[in-house]
Length: 196
Image: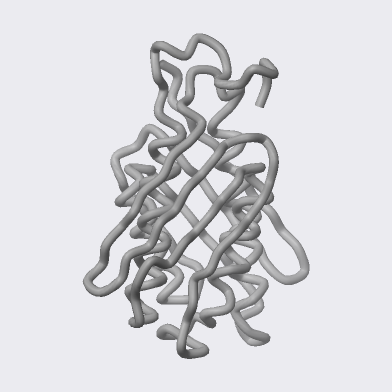
């Protein structure tokens, strides 16, 4: 099987971003965004999805973390889409209900070619470490639209913001890993339309 990898660079007046992902990796991560908690979340995403991930970001953090995090989501989403390729043989759907202490978060993914994001994740405080909590929605929204996937989160329980965020990133990793698995029974794409 050909390794499913992608490398992308995106440069604007606000950010300079490089992302490399190998969907068939082992969970190695080399991440530097300038936002410590965001780095931690991306490292967890790589480890628990068994993706090899490199992320290097230089953003206008003197303004705030919005452009850095949202633009990283855009580039990561495009890299995921490129790495998946023609989608032949993949399971297409993936889901995970992930516990983290008092928190339980469900994530479901459909690599449908149609972007859609839906979430009821709730955060109590404005920040976790040095990351604005409202950027978690912006990041996942950007990933879902750039990767042309349906991405849903349901928070089943939880009141610790760190646990909620970490459970969401890890559940997304597990759901995406499940959706990108090659199933030998699927000889084309998993759609009656013949394309996704």
